[in-house]
Length: 275
Image (cartoon, rainbow, N blue to C red; front, side):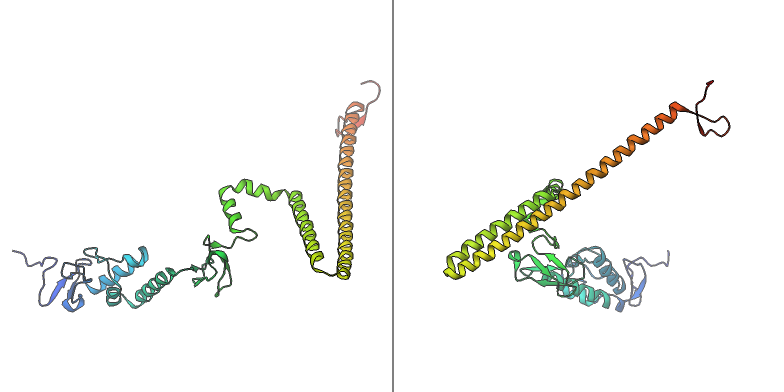
């Protein structure tokens, strides 16, 4: 007959932990079950229970912490009773963040500063400016704000990024569309002003608009002139490069026909009689 104790045997108020297998005093174990859902007496020491909670919190969701023996989910009060101080603080932070993030129009900062806030503008005003780091986020897409793109344009970019980028690569077309939009707006403003102003004000407004149009046409004419000049200079440069290349080719051809390498130094020398 052996004197060795079995794993769960108790001697003089001691018992063996089913996790670490260490023999500990009874007061080093939970008085009652780890959670009210457990159907077994507590056979895991307090140290191992705290370690299990800390480990679960590192690898599971905050509300998926389990009893190390039977796997029942621990409630908030259970974690507060058995976790170490650092784990309690982290658990409280995660549970608080989870609770507040369920509020309507709540968004965590996408810059990762750890701050979140309720955005009263909702989807109608999708830009959210973080009150901690001042970074901008998109409330609709839950990403950093997509500069120069509306939410609809951002959706189009995600659906077909290749064609979306190529559309913006056509600079001349974009410039023409913008110029047409400005002219249409100016015409609309002028028409609206003419319905509201008195005769004298209408005349002054007409003169002002004509001056603006004159200046605009002048600017457009000057810009066109500068563009044509740049194209002309570029063409001259291309023609010059082509001419030089042709001259170099002709020179090489001539040297090949009229010279031969020096037998000693291999420098091209002019051909003479006798060879």
